[in-house]
Amino acid sequence: MRLVLFIAALCMAQPSLADPFKKIRRAIETKQTDTLTKLLKHPKSIVRQRAAAGLQACPKAEVSERSAAPLLACLENSNERDYVRAACGQTLSVIGEKRAVAGLIGAIGSAKGDARFLLVQALAVYRTPEAKATLEELKGDVDPFVSSAATGNAQ
Image (tube, rainbow, N blue to C red; front, side, top):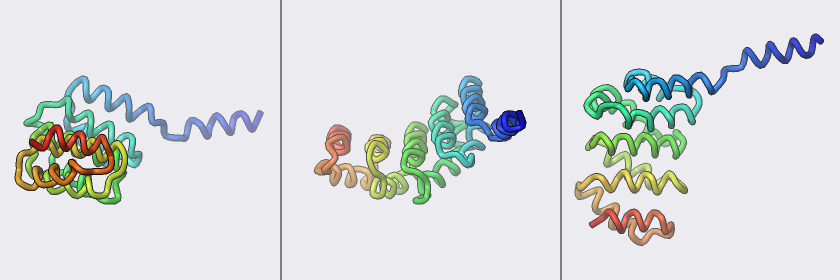
């Protein structure tokens, strides 16, 4: 009986991922940019990724004003997980944040797998000389998804 009570107490003491996900869902539904921006600092990477992606549902002007700096910091953080950086890069491209180009190019160079593809898609939104040059280089990438994204968007 003591063991059952101990396990029950231990389970209740563990922070649940359900709470941040509920908070994210509510924030997206009510377009709470500030709540989602705060969640970019959450200790769990999946929460940071979902919060970054959720910002795409908020008004662009609000996200640009309140969230661009934390999103840029996330994108430029080489210690951040690739999929979180990709979500930050995608959101920055949705709001048209021009300062994201250098961060996207840097993240593409170090990212792997699907995150790299998503970063290339985000970069394709920009028509700067740096973005065009990087997309041109990526046309010959060994990853067929990356090269396809670069080919389709580099023109």
